[in-house]
Image (cartoon, rainbow, N blue to C red; front, top):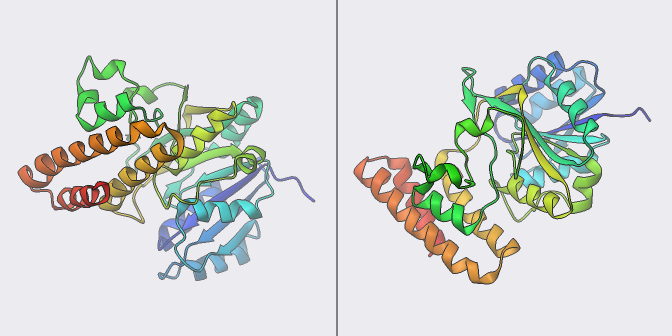
Length: 302
């Protein structure tokens, strides 16, 4: 059997054209690397499955997995990983575009550093402006700082290891606690060892939770500001879903990994933070999406 360096796993859900653009960018801009592409379709209704079938006829490196329904990001990627033959797995969002042979550079770096559990590169918006990626594991301190806007203050905020760091934090290569799942390389043996993504998390925070488990078994997470890829962002889900899911699954993370006495404080922080955002953004500024998002957050927390 031919050795495969990298298994590229991408979950598709009603992103037909975006997914096609992503696949074409992989084929066009990946050289000097033995790879396979595993596309998992989560029950798309926009012709994505048919497009993937056609693409696989022209590009036999594509393996198509039909999940038949929307099983979420983590479960979809786990399903793809079961088919993977690569030494490394790349979890790649369908709304990304590659250039400058980014994958070869990334795999070479990870291979040289065997204690890396998770790796991500610089993410760019469509206009090539910078996009943050990853951050620090949640603690009571940085949770309260985030929910009460303390980490936005120029002096106090700079000394707190924020869950969502400021843009300047990504200007250099560095170890981080977690990186985004839009572009995430992990060793397959390690991924299998820890049991893959937590399938109780439908979408959002799953990459952070995975990186946390990597850290518990002695592996680190690394961010590099080169190479870079384009991440269009939010193609399948709106901001309301993202905001509500982040709160929901952050609470789940605390239940799973932190001491029980912290949970009432976590819920208080999210409850108060959601009320503040509902007042500021949803009512005073009249943002309808924010209003709906934080009302849903409150319902979930209560």
